Length: 221
Image (tube, rainbow, N blue to C red; front, side, top):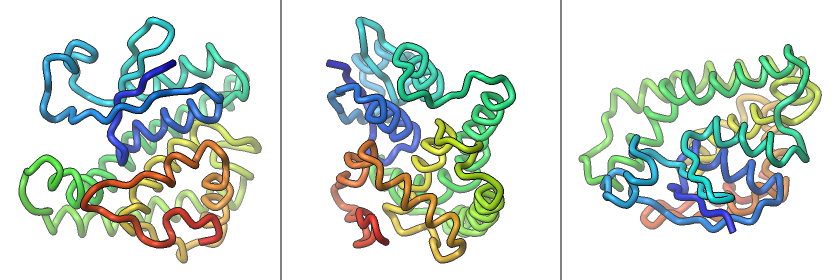
């Protein structure tokens, strides 16, 4: 069985978990306190980051390369299109959420409110929290703009772009930092994606000291 070293609220780990589940690959989840930089973990990934996936005798790191490897070695259902323009758009949006969204929103909200406490790094920086709360509005509006023109974020079919966005938003939704009333089309998109069987383990997450809101696991939120 595959083994994933992860942190439950990490959007990068959640992206890999969603990909594994969508492709029906059984996987043991092992929580890793990566910030402690244990020698055993650094041997698995010298970069000292999660996720790390052990599968088929290999040890894989970095969420996007892991997901692309899974899509190539387990092609059904496909999460990255074969056509170059469509594949480009998926990769562009994956990078958008893992880079721009992460830097402007996830790191300002989730990391300040949850990660700092878990790592015993002090109290949240109110300036960062306010900055993230402002920035998420712009990103939600951009997603709504895309979904007004497409069935899914990158086109007519669900792709890794949708899982990447949902990984970030689900982690923020766990701490009630997403205003789903801002856009009906965005709320409908998230309702569709969180209703997939692949999302079940994500919705079952429980982080000690951080209980989720009542709507978090509600498919009809």
